Image (cartoon, rainbow, N blue to C red):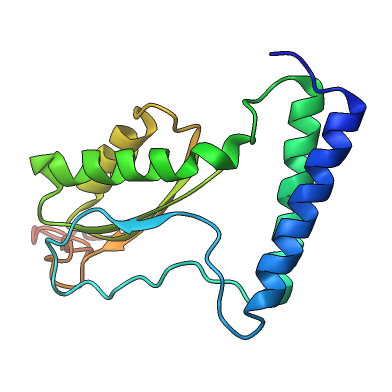
Length: 176
């Protein structure tokens, strides 16, 4: 990939900053969602719903600035596709959510997926530690996923493991 020339880069940055500023200023009181978010599975009714990651106007402006800087840096270095890694996040998020939803191993879970810079965050409920491990590994293997953040938890309806210590077997006592 070839780096952009300086004039083109300045125009791109100016446009991105104006777009970010006007987008954040137009709905100053309305929450803003920057990252794609989707529910992949609905199999656990006891799992509390996960809200989408929403930002207020000031947080959105700050994030827009950070994202423009990241995009500018990788474009100048020639290490990313035009538009930066955020541009492909909706497709990555949709593909990951669809893949989880289509896999029968995760049918009894309730999982939400958020993607930012090809980094996928998993939230919601699974039935066991083994299922959690399988799900995280499955998502790590999906195309376009660079990292996975595991914020899953055990379902409130799942049987909890018995963590009590086994009692010592009764036997003859030693005499001193």
